Amino acid sequence: MDNLTLSIVPWLKNTILGGLLFFGSWAFAQAPVMDIDLVATEVISQGQTGTCWSFCTTSFLESEAHRVTGELHDFSEMASVRVIYSEKVERYVRHHGHHQFGPGGLSHDVTHAAAVFGILPASVYDGGSTLEGHDHGALDRRLTSMAKKLVKKSKGMAPADFAEVEATLDAVLGALPNTFDYRGVKYSPESFRDAMGIDPMEYASLSSFTHHPFGQSFVLEVPDNHAQGEFFNVPLDELEDAVHSALERGFTVAWDADVSNAGFSFNDGWAVMPEAAETKEEWGSLGAMPLEPSVDQAMRQAAFDSQENTDDHLMHIIGRATDAKGRQYFVIKNSWGQGNGFGGKQFVSTAYFRHHTIGIMVHEDGLQPEIRQQWVR
Image: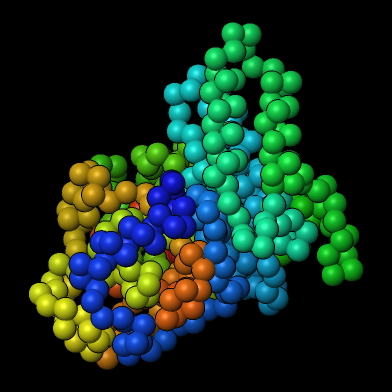
């Protein structure tokens, strides 16, 4: 996920694009009936940042902790950001500036931060949040400038060179604590992670593209995969089935998708394939929603190859719903605040999911047995 997810940008973009089709407000239409409604923390806003990857995956891990322990805890999104931002600068310099650099990331960045550092409660580490929320505009510009200066240095890399980077991150986000007290217990970030039942090695990333063999892992070619994370490649039907299977087993799913299209409307609370709509009346109520196009593997691949589908935004799939005509939707928790008719959640049609998904993350126990047997940590 890249700078498209700076919260005001997608709102403006989707308002302009979506306004061409979404004349009525679906927030007032009949909502689908929830079939599966799994536990998650409240919807919050990522503010003026490009860190949806952390907000999504942190929410995902919160639900995972509840699944394991039976208790719901609020984890710090910015703890992962603080860990990963340092690594981004170093990686950029080691590649002599020829590497993706920016605020974006993917779900495996959060599980990696959990593995190498741990997890913090939000009450312990707020990451420099103010009453207005998070705003990383100045920080992103400052880090970019420092990273470029480090590339231009002629004496190579030295620990002292990164002191300014660390000091800047500490000043804006805060220094990460080695120990802390939480609900009367003293923890380290690692011991808190373990107490929450989170094992970072147990999470699988899946995708579906024909330019790599099915049944094998590959490095997903999107700019914000700066860590060169691998995804297990499965046919499209199996990718969709993986989400149904996980939800039916009580596992939520982290979801990376393209949202820069007319079918994704946060304001209306929907994400659908709009090509079949001929008149605004067809979108005026859920009962009148037209049939969506059938999305197959070739259609999906063509959209990725043409860069119609790009890695825009990560969200948290927390449930499933069915409309009056029997059509199913995945229910997502977005990170753009609660400002729509569904409190910040959205209904994602299965056609939209099949066409616009970049990748997903799920606990290995939530996978179909046939996929889990093939997937290798």
